[in-house]
Length: 362
Image 1 (tube, rainbow, N blue to C red):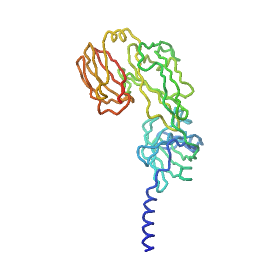
Image 2 (cartoon, rainbow, N blue to C red):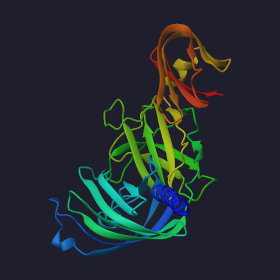
Image 3 (cartoon, rainbow, N blue to C red):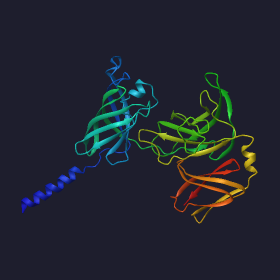
Image 4 (spheres, rainbow, N blue to C red):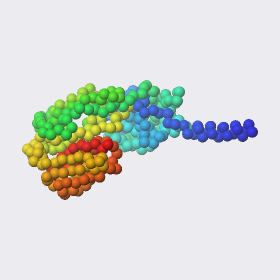
């Protein structure tokens, strides 16, 4: 009987060992020490750029799968310190908790594009938490290295920015004209916001601006999205412009987001703000339109106008389209009963003019 009891104990112990949890924690920060080589573009190490010592820091966030983590920079600091990139290259790492090994397979180069990263490594655990890990990595370009990571701290992602300038849904926002550093005539708008008041301090702000609420990643004139990463030393971006271009135009509605970032990650509820630049047509035309909207029984968005409403599109606060409907009438009712509670944006087309407003589904 004792033998049977021991066998059952050993069996369940084996199951427990094989089902160990991922020991990495969201927001972990590690100091890194690397020996890297810069690639020659053909998959080999450049002899003039070999055995480069680098030190840096990386952040860890949890991936979509329970055995995945995302490292903020797989290049050991090479992309930032060696190539002058604004940020390192994120990569998803698969964690084998049974064998304490790490694997990266064909992680895309999100900074320069074209190449993919592969890596193998292992980690050590102290008191149930990862203390150190090592990665030997390379990409198709020829960049390669071995990086040792030592646990430093746990950082909380910053909260959201607030109090935007231009104010959300602002109209008649001035467009300024000025000369850039290369003496090109450019158009600019003043931007500002308040820093997050929750979470740990951000290290950078990513600002994205578009005249399309879906923020398409293209360079067409009609739908043009611009973005940039800025140090968190300022939240005042007076006369922000796209170098060499007259990006901001009169009588145009723009959408923008600010994403605070640190090694702990980014907030999950970044809001889309909107404003419309000043122009002869914008305010006067829509002032001539009588338009109203309200929520009926928390299940319908009711619209009414003295002009024909041609179409309506609804978006989540993150800019994802959730409903599109042709109306071609002066009134209409949209079914929002299946929507999750939260803030949504509506984009209404009336006689060639666009009006954007927000509503709350409780």
